[in-house]
Amino acid sequence: MNKLLSIVFLLLTISLTAQEKKPNYVAENYTKKEVHITMRDGSQLFTTIYSPKDTSKKYPIIMQRTPYSCSPYGLDKFDESIAPNEVMMKEGYIVVYQDVRGRYMSDGLYDNMRGFIPNKKNNKDIDEASDTYDTIDWLVKNVSNNNGNVGTWGISYPGFYASYSLLSNHPALKAVSPQACISDFFFDDFHHNGAYLLSYWKATPLFGPQKTKRTPDDWFTFPKTNTLDDYNFFLNAGPLTNLDSYMSKNDEFWQQLKDHSSYDEFWQKRGLLQHMKNIKPAVMFVGGWFDAEDLYGPLNTYQTIEKSSKNYNTIVMGPWSHGDWARNKEKQIIGNIYFGDSISANFQKNVEANFFHHFLKDNGKGENTLPEAYVFDTGKKEWKSYDAWPPKNTEKQGYYLQSNEQLTKVNSNDGTFEEFISDPKKPVPSSEDISQRGITPRKYMTDDQRFAAKRPDVLVFETEALDNDTTLAGEILAQLQVATTGTDADWIVKIIDVFPNSEPETKEIAPYLKMSNYHMMIRSEIMRGRFRNSFIKPEPFVPNQKTSVNIKLQDVFHTFKKGHKIQIQIQSTWFPLIDLNPQTFVENIFYAKKEDFKKQTHKVYNDSKIEFTILK
Image 1: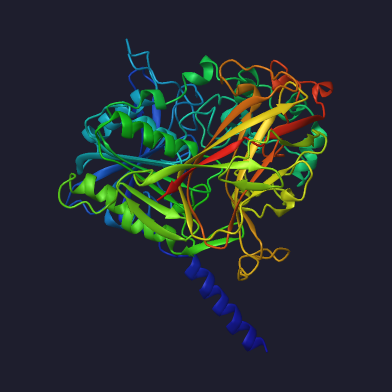
Image 2: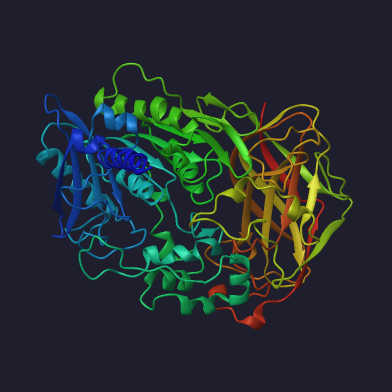
C-alpha cells in the first residue's frame, strides 16, 4: 500500500510540475518593455511594449489604450495572450498597451469620456486624440523594427479609445477596429434614450473616484448590496438618492450622472459622432446583435463615417453578446439560444486577422477579400455579405397595433386603444432570473418573454403564423400614439420571434422552459417619455391627451421563418434593467422623492405602428 501511495504521489508531483512549467508563448517569443511616454503637456502615460524576439524583419504596431489597466506590471510578468487574437499574436506584431491618462500607472486626471477639442490652441489643450497622436509619434520613432504602420483596436471602453484614435490624424495610423465602441454615453451603456440603466449602477465606481498616485492596483471599491436578488434590492432601496449611501463620497461619475439627467452640454461635448468627418485610416467596426451594453456605438459610428468620409469603412455584426467575438468558446450560445460552432474563432482568423494584415503588413495592396458588411442572420443562423449596410434591396413596411392583440399591415382606423395600469411598486421584471452575472447583462437579450406576456401591465400584439420567411435587415421605428393619466412615463417596445408549437427541443434550453412556443426577444428599446421631443429639453405629458412617441430601435438582421409569428410587447417598466419613472413629472428623476412615484393608467392607440426594414 505504501508503495502504491508513493507512486500516486510521484505522478501527482509530475503532473503539478508540468502545469507549473506550461510554456507561455508570449514570454518565449516576445520581449517586454515598460516606459512612460511624455505627452505634449508634460504628463507621462504608462505603456507596455511587447516586441517579437525575431528581429530579422520589421513589424507593424498594434495598440490598445485602456482605462482597465495594462497589467501584468513588471518586466518579468508576461500576459498569456496579447494582440487582438491568437492568430495575430503568432503571426508577429509589436503589441502595445497603454493606461490612459489618469488611470493606474499613468499621470494626470481621468475624465470619463473626455471631450474632443477640434481646434487646439496650445499644448494645454489635450484630449484622447492628442494623447494617441503623441503616443504613436513616440512609438514609430523609438521602437526598433517597426515598419511605420500602426493599428489600434479595443472592445467596449478600449473600443471608445480606438474610435477616438481616428481623430488623432497621425499619418502612421493605417487601420482601426473599434469593437463594441461607445460613441455617446447618453445613448450607450448608462443611458438609453434618456432612461438610466440601473443595471450598470454597480459598475459606477469603475469610473468614479480619482486616484492620488501611480498605482498598479485598484483604488475603488464596488458597492456591497448583501443580496443576490437585484430586483428586490433596488425595489426596497426606493428612489435613486437612497443609493448614495452605497457610494464613495468622492465618486465623481455618480455625481455627474445625478446632476446631468438630460442631454446637456456635459454629455454633448463628450460625444464622438459629430466629429467623425474626413476619416483617413481603414476602419472595421465590430459588434454583437445581442450586446446589451454597446450596440448603439458601432452601428451609428459606422453609419456616420459612411456618410462623411471616403475611407475604407466596414462593419461586422455577429450573434454575440458583449465582447464574445474575442473569446474562444467553441459553441456560441446567448441565453437559451444556440447559434453555431467556432463562430468567434472564424471571425478572429478569417476576418479580424486578415483586416489588420492587409492594411498593416501589405500596406493595403493586393486583393482584399473582406466585404463591406459581414452580418449574421440570427433567425436563419448564417452569415451574409453585402456591399452596404443596411442592404440596398430593402423596403419599409408598417405593422399596426390592432385590437384583440393583433399585429397587421392594415390599420382599421377604428379609434380604439389598449390600456394597462403601470405601478412603480410592482414593475415588470426585465428577466425571469433573480440576478445577473457580472456587470453586463447578457442573457436577457434573447430571453423567453412568455413570463412578461402573461402580465396585465404588458400589451401584446401578434401576427398570424407567417406564410413565408420574413427578414428584417436594418433599423426599426416604433411610432406610438399614447396617453397617460400622469405627466411622465417610459415606453418600452420589444420585438419577439414566437416559435411554432412544433419547434424541436434543444440541449441549450433551460430545464424549466421549452422551445415549443418560445418567445425569443430579438430587439428592445426604451424611450423616457419626457424626451419624446427633445433630449435637451424634457417636457411633461398633458394628462389623458393623445401624444406621439417615436422610438428608434437599433438595427437587426433576423429572419422570422415560415410558421413563426412576429410579436410586439409594449410596457412602461423594465426592472431592474432600467430605473423607475415616477410617472409624475419632476425636474430630475435622480432626485425624485418617494411620494413622486404614482400608479398611472397608460393607453396605446390602435393607429400606432411599428415600421420594419424588410429585405426584399
